[in-house]
Image (cartoon, rainbow, N blue to C red):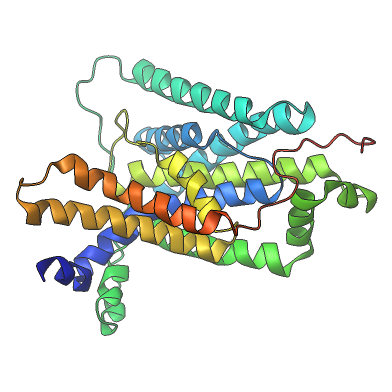
Length: 313
């Protein structure tokens, strides 16, 4: 019964939403890239680069929101670099994406070591504070959980709504979805396939970087090696789970956040009887099961990972 009672605690859902926030940004970013027909496996490195750049900008004296913009700018630049190889030159999206991850991760770690060559513990910044929205407490359980979140979490929710509106209610969204399904038809309409894909990569990668910045500027107040811990790869899987839809992307991120928060509390209940590694595996195992259940029916973009060369059929 104690294991079930965890689900009725607002502190549990507050933790689940907090854990889910970087995944929301990451899945939205991957979704936008893939809707335009480009697989961005650079997401893991973009997470690292966003985490370092946003945190370092704030440490050097800018305000928190400027730090978020700095992280987004770094992510957009990495997305454009990915696009130069995959969209303009038509190179392998898999290989290029992994190369971006290796480059961005190494550059971020190198930059950190150059900036702080002698420190033994990471410097701290003044991170985003919970908004403490007390008026939400009228809603049981979920209200207090939402009221404890920071502004970046609310920004993630807003991005879900904005992404859904743009993709399904605007001509730009229609063009992005079309370029991911049938780029030749978009080209026939006089629109630039390359420009649409490059723009989607820039925006999507910027969102990924903000997801990384959340970890150093909201969840924690410092950067340390290994803090991304595979979150980017999880976002790629959650994008398939979401069937490339923003609303389901939010649901998938929240489910993974709930699994992760739940395993931490189960470890406490188990009292060391069960090896901690079993609990650490739980969120990933459950995510794999969920992915298997929906992957076969996923309506993926038809031109995903297919380079478009003007004039060729």
